[in-house]
Length: 152
Image (tube, rainbow, N blue to C red; front, side, top):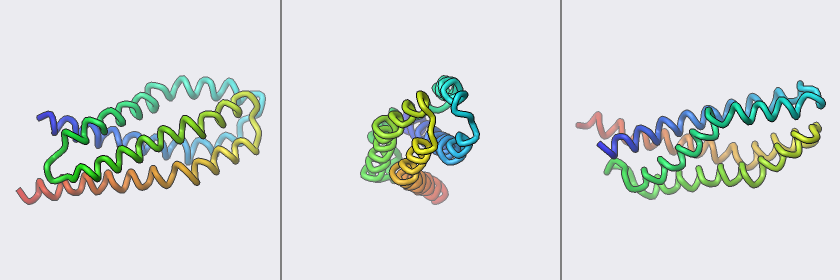
């Protein structure tokens, strides 16, 4: 029962967070060019408040479920794959905190096209590949679970 809860919770949160990341970083960032410089600080502060319960909290919960999933997973899954996905998830959070957040803070105080280009470039270079890789690994995990259940 605990394995089922951990597996379901982890996979649901993972796909939800991946969707949030794609929407926030690949869709939302591109629209920021349209926001006037004098309006951007207030806009960004409000956005960050709104993202807390819908994006940041699920991302934290996903990481916690991932830790539990390392020990509480279906037997057909290799622990190494789950640890690899954990490392990708931890990397995404670390990259966000160490690279993205400082750029966000600078944008909030002084929006510029240069900073926005830098934010998007850093995302495309450092974070997006790990997000896609994590999603692929989570699809493989889900597939292994489904294929094993089909064999029963």
